[in-house]
Picture 1 (cartoon, rainbow, N blue to C red):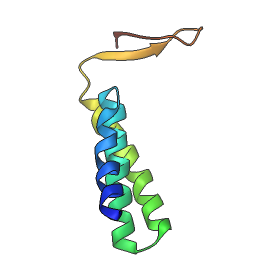
Picture 2 (spheres, rainbow, N blue to C red; picture 1 turned 90 degrees about the vertical axis):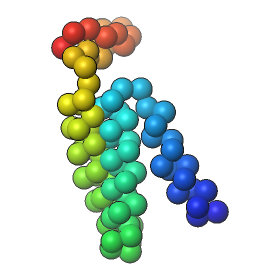
Picture 3 (spheres, helix red, strand yellow; picture 1 turned 120 degrees about the horizontal axis):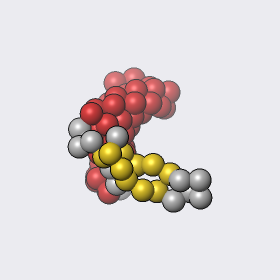
Picture 4 (cartoon, rainbow, N blue to C red; picture 1 turned 45 degrees about the vertical axis):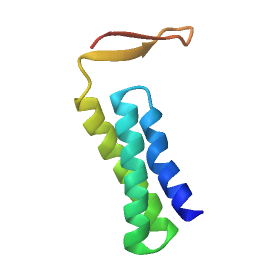
Length: 82
């Protein structure tokens, strides 16, 4: 059961939309696993997820090809040049 949860936690972030979202999801998942294994408690996993998520978002944002997602005043998402 633990293996199934671990594999699904590592595969699900790949379904994110943008490189930033994908990087944040992968970073948070990896950080949580590493933090949990390194410290052996939930607090270490939470800190690892936070640090990994921020680092992954920054790396993913740097890999986006000059197109950004914006929202208009009605909440609709659209892409345009950054």
